[in-house]
Image (tube, one colour):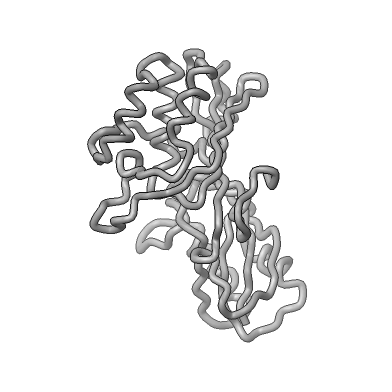
Length: 249
């Protein structure tokens, strides 16, 4: 039997989602918890990786077991640390795949643009100087559409030649001192959201023009963008398994 799970986690103390030989990861922690419950080794398959210190409210993974456990969600959560929480679990068909079946992803990036707050240091990026949201919104339009994002990700061409992705919408909102940049797209390459985010921040600070952003994108060159926003401001909000429509968010 195959199960689909939605999980939230605080990424502060983890070396990312992907299991590693020496460092603590979210994947390994969840696998150990489920394996204890079903009494056999379990491998979970995530919708994608999140990097060290990146958080999630709606990461998705699947796993297989022939064991039927009553109150499965409660049982798994009882074996997990308080910074990981299974939000839902459901039995799915054997052909469901958390990664390959995903149609879109929604990420948020949180910026503290007011007074420094140590309680938010692990959960937002602090920018002291005031950001020009109008310029940032205008610059964000450069990234909308089905485009070649070679310049704005760290995935090597030898690892994935296809650097074309579709961003459906980028929304920039402000509440009190906090700015949220929301991304909706059919997929994101390594560091792609963070590199675009830091570029928008640089525009908001007056360090980069919108024309320069367009030129960076058009170059399709790994050396054209050296910006990469801090990891702790990034949140994986949702993984969607039906075609994206703007009124869905």
